[in-house]
Image (cartoon, rainbow over all chains, first blue to last red; front, side):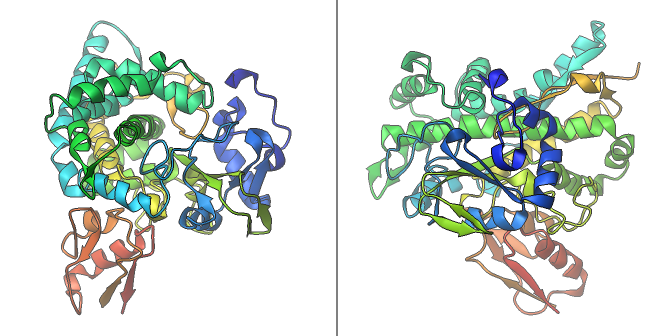
Length: 401
Length: 64
């Protein structure tokens, strides 16, 4: 579907974030629109808006009255909404239910709760690095580290967190592809993520442990257990939003390092810069573009947005706005003032941000310690995903012999 | 130097706690807790500025 989309004549009036040209040129498109438009529109997807300035993106993120979260992935059809939670609470929930659904998750994902996962994340990274060393020892000179490193880390950690088989990683990736990159194309129930999760949740209710799925099965709202749809929706959210995104951030960080000998040297020689470097990766290569459904007509920066239209929230474009950041278009490894919006703004701040940061940090630490020198095997062979999560999907690198 | 922290603007991004754990803790839901009342000790002033300058929600202000 994505390769037969009509060509985009003008990004300001006909943008299409699922078009291959967008994947290839997103940063240039954001910069051009920000200087000119700055809120693009398209009749595709039944009508959608695409703000590019930090100010407008922040305003929409924080206006939960006019901009509903009941749709967060842009599709041709409007979502069929199980009120009040939406199909993946809390990301698809609006106030007041949102705070209840989010509160259940926050304790599991708080900074201190997530710290406990560091040894598991580190062991996961080291296992993948050992596999890559074995490939090198076997004579392979070019290795796709999106396929063999970055994507495995969040898949494996999420499987451990939910106590699902790590081997199901390929199944997770299929669901992510169906929902994020083929948004709107229905699959039969038996092949869907809903079926997979319904099956596992039903079994888990009879064999509870201390994993996140068991935690959700036992959570309650004012004494009432969560509905099956709530448990399923939240776990689906963790798989869809927790894997693709982190895979993208780790991949983008490695893509950057592969091309910058100066930043590689700085990372290794000056460990104090690493926390700032990681936040700069998140600013400069923020993977996530969120979306809202417009609930009530609203005028914003001269645009009349109609109820039922989509509004996209390209946080990576906000992060490159010169009005909000000095040297916005440059990767500054020791940037000290960095109010980036990689995890969103307002009440829907990514609930898994502490986990995502942990995975990004440990993945970069372990990679750079194992392979301080590496480079792109072929810059033209790097491909970027289309749609609302942006990151390298093929990242072949080689190592000095 | 004093720190003004607006709990109602905090969304739990956790930047302040990462950058300045001497000045900010987090509660069990991940929202920030300001640890100092009154003047910021001189040796922590730079960290206080970092915490303010990196809050995506502008929930932290520095008063010199």
